[in-house]
Amino acid sequence: MMAKVIDCYVERTAARLLRSLRKSGGSIPLHRIQFSQTIIQHLLDKKQAQIKNTGQGFLVRIQV
Image (cartoon, rainbow, N blue to C red; front, side):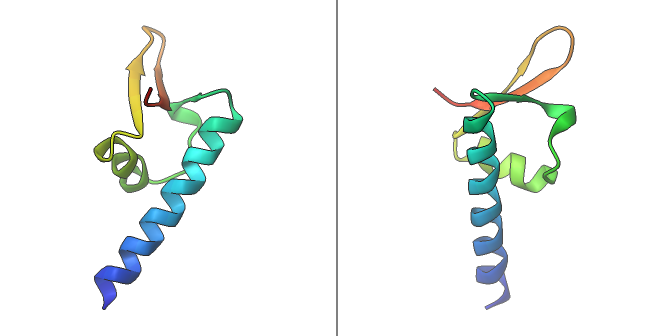
């Protein structure tokens, strides 16, 4: 039962991060993200986001 509650929390929170990415033009500098590593990793695992090294930092952006 507890794992399902955690999964729902991760899904909802990941959806919030995805909405934030969309509102910011599709990408946000990684250091500005106020979400946990678990949430970011969830989007990466589902191939909904990717991380790009710009040479001056990292961007989390929506997977195209």
